[in-house]
Amino acid sequence: MHTTMHLIVVVSGSVPDLGMREAERVLGCDVERVGRRVGLIELEGARLRSALAKLYECVYIQEILLGKAWTDHPRPEASFYYELGCSSEWSEVIGKTFAISVRKIGGFPSTPSTELIASVAKAVHSACNGQCNVNLTNPDVHIRLICASDAAVIGIQMLRPRGDRFRLRSNKFKVFKHPASLTPEDARLLVNLAGDPELLLDPFCGTGTVLAEAALKGIEAVGLDVSTEAARGCWSNMKLFSVDALCSVIVGDARRPPFRQESFDAISTDPPYGRLATTRGAGVQTLQKCLLSLSSSIVKRSGFTVFMRPKEYSSQLHFDGLGIVEEYSVYVHGGLTRVVCLLSKH
Image (tube, helix red, strand yellow):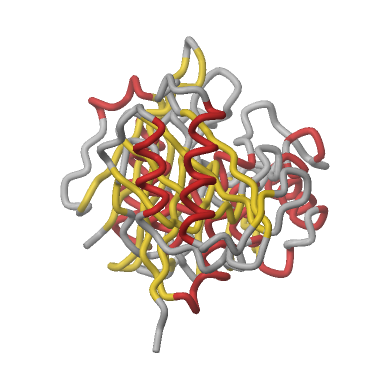
């Protein structure tokens, strides 16, 4: 018999739809929207460990809970959260100690956090018939209440990923670096959105940030760059991060790719653009059209192409014949908004 479990994911408020999509792509299943920033995932208990490992590597996920109770119609009064806590069984807490913390998204509700915590604690204690105790310093179980105007969830906190977990692979630590290089967070997002490919291509690999993030997920990755200097520097970075066993770097022009038809499962890349990027005389639109051509030729029919582009080029690209197109705008700074594009061929 398989036990069904529910995971609650809380994503960043910057682009919540992209955060939900990232979780869906890494797990290969749907995420039900409980609220704008709160998603619900149903899975078999046997998949819990692997699901947590995959979600931990998601850039936009802020918290993961084992869901116990949830609603998309929250109310502000403390009694509501007592009722919500009583609506679930708490077998994980019986005979153990627990502590409760609360997070208010958007300041909802205005009810003091201490009252909310007391209400949930009373509900848990009642559901366990008094066979549990509060321990604020070293609890066995950490119960988390997430409140927003469009959702309220109570669960056992499983993970709260560190925001700096990718930073040791940033430009600062590379042997070969370039000011226009992707951050490891952006590169990991592009890789995560590609799903679970066996062989991935970055046709504009530069310093190799995408290749490193792919290889660290166990994906075999191939990088292509028109610059011999960049290809050599990229390979130095792969050795530095100890991922060279899963990577190959080739000197070549993406406009004349040295690959067979449908030879890759996915493409994840950041085509060059802007003042700091080198395009070797090719216009930005030319390179992006080149990428779309690559997508239609060397990616397998079930594959995905994921890339970023400046928002200003949105009306100048045509995706005809490339299947389903998803686009997510990500604000970077006053002069730049990137669009994350996800193309599927089916």
